[in-house]
Length: 348
Ligand SMILES: C[S@@+](CC[C@H](N)C(=O)[O-])C[C@H]1O[C@@H](n2cnc3c(N)ncnc32)[C@H](O)[C@@H]1O
Image 1 (tube, rainbow, N blue to C red):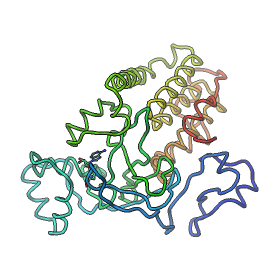
Image 2: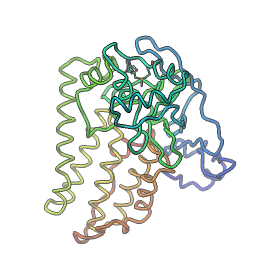
Image 3: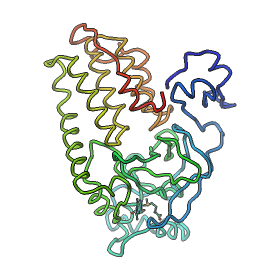
Image 4: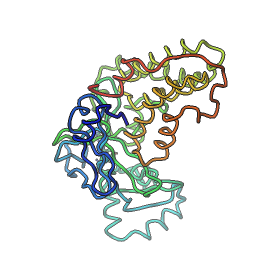
């Protein structure tokens, strides 16, 4: 998490959770200077959200109050859990264990006539841990919007292996009354043409701002994303043979361009690549600056209780813990430019 260096600001302006004493948010200076992370833990109540009818989408979820980026919106135990892979016999068995209310709940999700029960399981029950799928009362009512140059989802979900709950986190500020939306295609590395992917797998025609662009613009975005993913795949092979400073320039350029395409969730991953490069060359200062972005990205998408966050926080605190520290020698590289920081930390 970005820390405010103004001690007074931290002391006076920080709200703490009464139980765990964790920083909730700084309401003063550093809110302007740094990205504040809002936590909703230890009995602090979740923001008020509501399931409502959304024209053209069936049900959806809106917020009744402003939600700040980084807030844990809700953490939910799935109401129904089924095995990930179901044989026809397995489906019958799973269904036989549903109460009547659960069955009505399960059937209340929109499906086309051609879908059988197995299709319904596959579409509406996200993976919840090893070999299982779960259907949550509220989180599974959240609709989709695409990452695109015209906008991005304002929330993201994550399975918390410790609490065994699905979490919904605000990855952007969400205005009172606004719909909460996630992307059903959450990884830039799994990029596929959104319109046909959503039509084939979820049977709806996405009309988000990105999909409403002219076909030529959507094609251009797709080409950029395919080229980006190819570049990501090739990146590790360049560590060692190529000039590290030119690789860093390249990483920065790609961070900026993937953000222009709306995929700011990838900034943390690329920052971790840059961290590794700096760590291979034993540049502790630069490594730390890069990994701080990765750590903050995990805080945003997965929360500070997650293993992902903890591993990254440990590396950000001491890059020498990297398995191949200084393996390529010693070289002073550099930390992220302001342009890269602007991609991840809004209003800084
Ligand atoms: C996980 S459910 C979301 C909740 C659902 N809207 C409901 O009524 O229960 C996924 C389904 O919601 C609908 N949906 C989600 N996002 C949509 C969007 N952007 N436009 C239209 N329909 C959408 C599609 O029917 C999709 O298969």
